[in-house]
Image 1 (cartoon, rainbow, N blue to C red):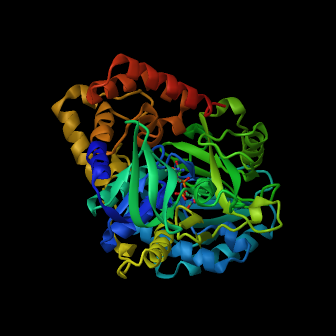
Image 2 (cartoon, rainbow, N blue to C red):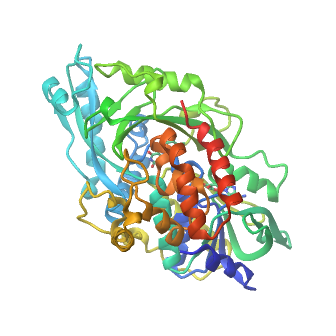
Length: 517
Ligand SMILES: Cc1cc2nc3c(=O)[nH]c(=O)nc-3n(C[C@H](O)[C@H](O)[C@H](O)COP(=O)(O)OP(=O)(O)OC[C@H]3O[C@@H](n4cnc5c(N)ncnc54)[C@H](O)[C@@H]3O)c2cc1C
């Protein structure tokens, strides 16, 4: 997947069946769906694939136990089906994860146990493990760090877990393999209109500084929390549809949570659930739900959000963690769709919403990472209707995602690459320097940097350290420490000069500061 080959396609004089704006889970899902139906599709992403919310999730492939408590059975059932399909279609990047909900009041394990058994039932044939009511001794055996005082037992259940940004990259590759053109660092700056109908987009290639007018039979706005900016390109007076809500996660060393079983805290002070989930030999704890006014590409956590997570996590642990134990903090914005008169974002719709404007702009937002495939199907169905395209059926329910491989050992450091791991090992075999680790505390090797440039369209140091290698999310200080070495490796491979290298490091350091405690 090479960017120069993709940008060459922008210079063709053609009318695309579909243009999709936004390269997060939703846009990439749409590119795969449309390409596999046989439509010509162009995807334009302003920054990098998954730079937005799609790299900042809790990393769960789930039905959403919280929505069950809200009685939203339809949403949960649909998401559980998608969970099952994703675990089958991208086995190298997803896995079954055991969870425990510890109980400190006698009735809790029966109450949550009943709900989670229903969760299990709703997954039907795509279920991944049985919910069980556990004794206090079993909870402590599986979750030795759990607070012992007052523990009366718990509930064990299963959900899915994944690497969000790496899935996004593999989805981009899947789309390209089926004929889509997907490009990062191309920003849509305006909409083309003919006879009051949307007929394409104006776009700027940020890296090359070139502008384009690109025509399409239908345009899909899949820009997540940014959808209102695109809607206002057609109708400057539009009130907008998104109420952004911020979610923060902290990342800790495994030693604070040395268990393979994840923790689910069923009810925080604001009525949410909070998770502690093992991820790449660290543990991710979150999240919060804080309404915000500003929609920034790099949202920042509030101090109260960090204290909130630490407070609730400590309540369930036998020992306490402190702010200084945090390795990284990442913040994502939920594109919740506004309902008229509520100021509380935790009760706004988590389902996806599709709106078609007067000029035919198809906007899709909301939903979840887990349900991207279903969202993509609905968006393409709508866009095909708007663009008067030949009707073709969606075929993604059994479509293998790039890298698909089963049976790889979990402890293989290149496990997440699936079938691509072999190529990276070959690079490392051919040049022993490429087999060297970037840092002794992490398994990442130099060959992965070359691979990400050659095959995964990594264009900047941030693309590399945040979304190809995930180091920024796992340990911000270590990511900052290795940044100059990685920038140099990238510059050598990409034929860039010292000024480029220095600028990459400077930009990365600035961004990384926002991930430090
Ligand atoms: C804190 C948090 C935790 C979550 N955890 C989970 C979870 O565990 N499991 C789960 O299933 N879901 C989870 N979700 C939900 C899930 O992450 C989101 O629903 C999903 O990532 C949204 O993807 P998207 O593609 O719609 O938006 P985004 O990922 O934000 O993508 C939109 C893209 O559009 C691009 N863009 C914007 N403007 C333009 C323009 N003018 N031109 C070109 N491109 C543009 C942006 O750069 C961005 O990359 C979580 C969400 C949050 C906030």
